[in-house]
Length: 59
Image 1 (tube, rainbow, N blue to C red):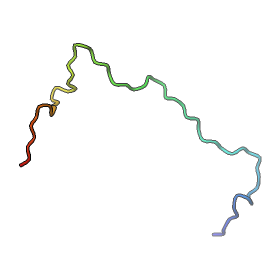
Image 2: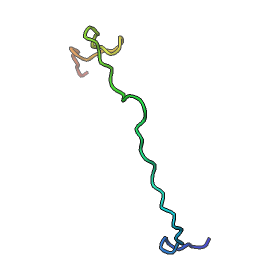
Image 3: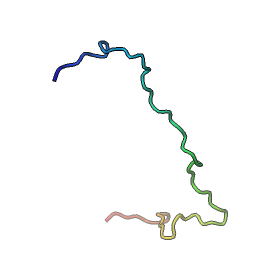
Image 4: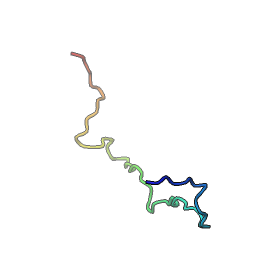
């Protein structure tokens, strides 16, 4: 392999340098948590257990 010269020795072509692609907003509504109805229970899942009122002891 032969070493190549640095960018200062490269031929000028007159073509503008490439720019990164424009970041576009993805179509659709933003993702949000669902608003719960007033009469809906606070539990997320029927089999979900909370630690409220649980007494923990070390053995």
